[in-house]
Image (cartoon, one colour):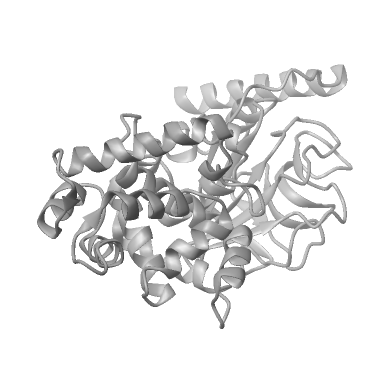
Length: 381
């Protein structure tokens, strides 16, 4: 899954001398399902797909693949597989050939993906509603293709589910299921965030900090996050808002921002949304402590007193301003000041090798020593 506008892997663009190999693998999959026969009937198709996709998608696919003879032939199986695993134009044509309302197609694809990944289906509606927000009123292959390019979550899910059907199950561990057991994010938001990460970072999640697990200590959070590389921060407020950001270059303690236009904000629970960088400025990841004239805390998208979100070093209070120009217009917390309930940070890439200023490093050492001393005193008392 990747950021909106990035390319889905296209089987139609495999080098010419490998196309026959791909078609051969599809034919082998067909004969595996058909048990060596020349056709696949309804009962066989449903039996071989019941563990990977939801019943309604089984019905949609079989009805499309089996016309006009009410059973599936190898030629139609291969033709449809090449389309739905192809580029955006081909995928759009394949989806329209299902001859169903687009919302139902989206629902069954998302439901099947959740089934494959063993995710909680209660947040499926959140993800479907997010995708439907931008759907064109008049759908044809061209408009649907353009939509697929703008909403990368849908073609990624379609590709993932279709690979299971037409190529076969994969043995890889279910990363999203493993992360979802520890995260504040709904499973729908987790899918959306995962899809918008750069492709090379999607499968490298590691929990760096959780206030539930590590305690409510800003210095502990800072120690865990500082120069840890690309990461995701998720904040839950006492007003039941959940939001966060992807910091493409992580957080480096000091007086300057880090990151680039791969950074994005996200929102969960109340609604799902991704807010991409506008390119207007580079006020992305910020982390600082122990300063007199600069903000002390961790934040994204802003400076001074105005931020998309900023968690102060007291680890209780936060700030959020609407319409910060670094990202597309949003108001993540829905209030100018918020109370933090929980926070978590996930590493999704390699550590940063950049060295910070000696003065900043010395300030950090003093702050951490003071924090450790105070925590020891509290424990002994």
